[in-house]
Length: 323
Image 1 (tube, helix red, strand yellow):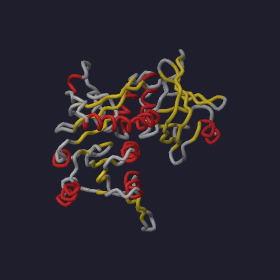
Image 2 (cartoon, rainbow, N blue to C red):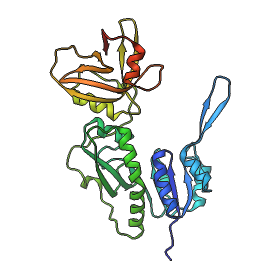
Image 3 (cartoon, one colour):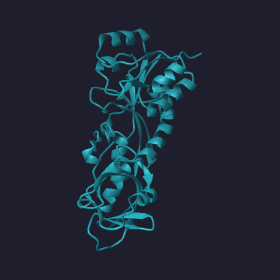
């Protein structure tokens, strides 16, 4: 009977959970889990609520040892990690690890990244592939090294991006694939069937990065950008962190307006850019080369809603614009 390696799993999000479940269901030897500390939400009445991330919840339900370090360089955390005596570590959707942590297992530490590396290294690869209008993306497993997202590649799986697909929809597809590529990578390492390759061998085109997205960079620039750029930006930021604009119901009444789902309408027109046209429970915003038709949105201080409910709520039909 084959001896299974001692695995430490490192992750902190719903995306990570798919890989962890796949390892556990297939009876791999998970000796410990590292995840983020609990989130504390403080309320006005001085009470507080502890928010447990899905990785911790799964670990507790299945009696898997757990560490939640605030500081990954803390000596007590590293001491406890060494007790687990991992042969290999697997990282899915976690913060940057110090070399002292990723370099400790004898078989190394490999990571899962939601792009076809070396393209889209960084914090938000799924968002940026759609924002930039890419037609394909995928998943990459690679050994962690000194430079972020730059280690030798183990496996890659490619997927096509749908023309109307949002970042949230693409993320759901990728996380459902994540468990299988983690198992395939692990087996390839154990059976010595994978030859790690430098990332420079994988791309001849200029590299695009995927930095963290700020709230301000989510604002839509109706005058400056083409219909395609605006359309890709909205779906690339949906549902989070979400594209937004300022909706003016008149010169004195305006709100921050989040936009989640739209359709693009290519059509010549003579309307000023940013004019909002409402008819038959439809809202169109004039842009270069046509219109952006809003399907799902959210007014400041309100819940997310479909466009029919928004139109019923505001009751105004004319002289509306975005900026």
